[in-house]
Length: 229
Length: 113
Image 1 (tube, each protein chain N blue to C red):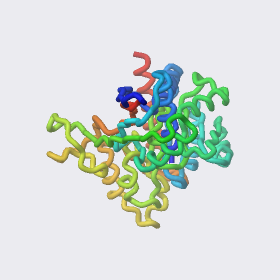
Image 2: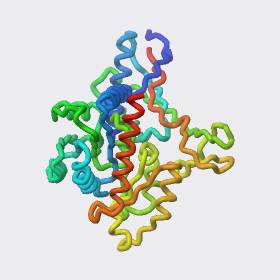
Image 3: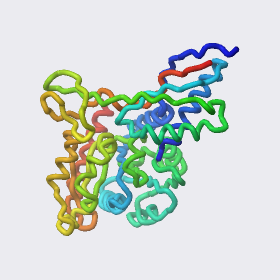
Image 4: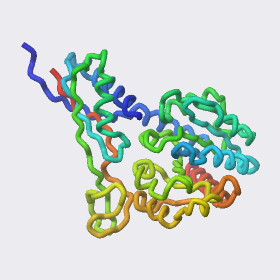
């Protein structure tokens, strides 16, 4: 006779392991004084072009490096290498998102000394669903949407917008051609994430990029001031 | 589709607990927040796959969906959110991103025998 079933309370966070690695990473980043920005978006929203622009413009002012997640190719790393910033590709295979352990491993493999960096950028796999659950230890998560994607994207993917800190509208040079409704997009972003700061820019023409870079510089200095207290 | 890797973590976690207690798992009780980024149906089918070839084969995953609760500073109270597409207080309409509950992804109990 088998014993009576019994209910045992456990209370364990399923992502405990990832969260623990992310916490350790965050402490490492903080003590090294590096500000870490992750980028999430759907495929084709211009993450890589935007990151290439960021690295190229930032390189003269700051010490920068980037990790790029991709399912199969090293194309993104090759493109980003044109910025002459240190870049490391993370090939995820069939995995649709980055996890904290992959970031940890990639930093070790790249043999970067975090103390020598001001900014580390992490480009996630193009996906608006899965990356939302995984903390990577970043200071700032930016969600990108391009003007060609449709104004209702925030309403369709509220979870990822809710997990992000800022939103970046990309490819603004195409706005007129696709009759992009900026007001509606901003309203939709605010509906799912009230108070979220929004940048609108074009990596191609450079319009609006400086405002974003100034914001990051400000955040870096705030973060270092806070760490010094 | 990250539900499979999440299901595998759940199975691993439950197997460890069951082994420690020298018992067999009949069911896993999971709290799943609406904002967790995990789709219940996808998780249920992934769970079956993840249980294959493990002592948990045939066990059930019981999901309790946890609604979003926000804090409204104007009402100075917690409120249940009506829609994920509109983060504002259902009573006074004040926009708020202060999420109190709804991001859970937690194994809360195991049914053992």
